Image (cartoon, rainbow, N blue to C red; front, side):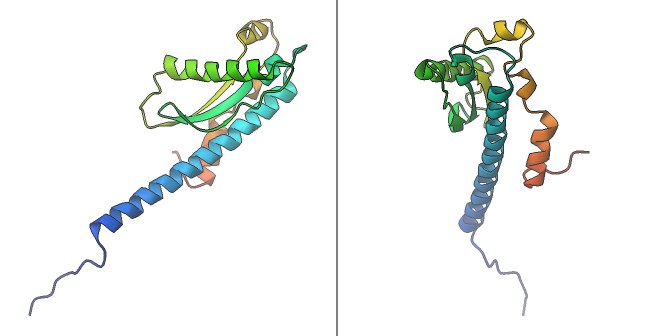
Length: 155
């Protein structure tokens, strides 16, 4: 009598479980990046060192978590007198980042933070802080992802 192994699972179920695991990790990563994006937006809006007479510049500060050029989670809530103008400027700025960096189909989840008004960089060039000081540090993002079990320890 010969002995052998009998699979107690089927390959389709096995691969479905792997797909679910990957999708769960992607969702965790997305939500972690969204948390960091919200913190970025709040910090930048609260701590900008410029006078914003119309609230358009502060209202154009936004983030978007994207994968393959598709928004997964975003905050374009804007604010100010030109709320729709700020929102449109933010969305265009994110689209520009996607195009300029060819983020169409790389299967990577990106956190993009912007100040959408076209004069934002001119304000920063005059030594005022619009978003630079509020940009998350890479180490903070890695720590959050490591704590969530999404990435392992980096040696």
